[in-house]
Amino acid sequence: MGHPADQPSVRIHESHRKQARSLEPDLIRWRRHLHQNPELSFEEQETSRFVTERLAEIPGMEISHPAATSVVGVLKGARSGRILAIRADMDALPITEENEVPFRSARPGAMHACGHDGHTAMLLAAARAFGDLRKEWPGEIRFLFQHAEELFPGGGEEMVQAGVMDGVDAVIGTHLWAHVPAGRIAVTYGPMMAAPDVFHIRITGRGGHAARPQSSVDVIVLASQVVQNFQMLVSRETDPLDSLVVSVTQFHAGTAHNVLPGTVELNGTVRTFNAELRKRIPERMEAILAGLASAHRASYEFRYDRGYRPVINHEGVNRVVEASAVALFGAKAVDFDQRNMGGEDFSAFQEKAPGAFFYVGAGKPGAETVYPHHHARFTIDESALINGVEMFLTAGRHLLEEGF
Ligand code: NI
Image (cartoon, rainbow, N blue to C red; front, side):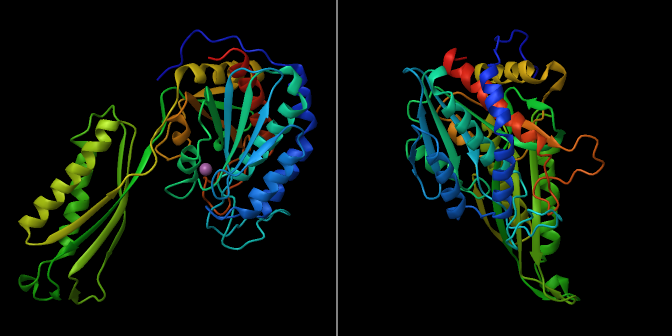
């Protein structure tokens, strides 16, 4: 989807810019502290305490913990007006870090391998800057520090249930993105990240001696057909212009080379943007399973769990995000269509208010190897952090003053 031609005119406030720049050393220090002390989803106690302590240093900040380890800071401006929410996620991943940096994770088996340490630090810096300039802007800002983005059912929904989005006029959020070089911002109109659903299948046949297949119901051959047939849902049953992923990622069966196993387990994920497709695919998967199982005298169990909703950006809010990026970094620094089939529970907040999610480029410019998010050597270019803060300040201020 292309971007609309007419953009709102977004002003850069020099006071914000100066304030943000002056916070850069803190910003990097906070990010490194968080990086060194990662905590897994739903276990962000120390992170939550760290965020609470930093927020408490900001005059006028009202702090609450609406759910588990989440933190919400509310700041009111010079006069009443619109309510803006800005969200950052705070959790790490169950990975042992392989980077050799002074601030590498101090915890084996936990690593900020997705950049959420940076998200938390950027939102803290934005909160500080908005706090310092409270007299300049109208309305209310809710700084949403979300726990557990990486683990379904996710912290976003829990925070929404607790009411953090009640009355909110617009919500923005970002992800540092290593696949876009630092200095660039990626803006996506419409669908941006997919609904990540999960399926579990168990096929039961009849085990036996590998040399006497006629006495068995071979689930390995059968399950292989299931895997193949699922791919036809993508290639033959779905509009090629629609996006769909069906991946079988686990295929477990068997104990010995001369034994036909009696059961096989298949697990995997389905990724969609489109609600109709999301509804149809599990029905079709089950039809394939039922047909093949019955044809080959096997039985099956099928469980399909819906994950996060897709991230679909609101056009009006997204225009403000794009115009802010252009105003701050120039039109040449803005990328479009970094759409992908990953999942993100920012969508939970978008259910409640018009919202836009964007990427802040965080790859080392000119780097030959970019380790992907969730890799043990994942890293960000720290010069990206201040760019994210400036985006929050500029787009945030515009949304408060002008709306979208
Ligand atoms: Ni992430």
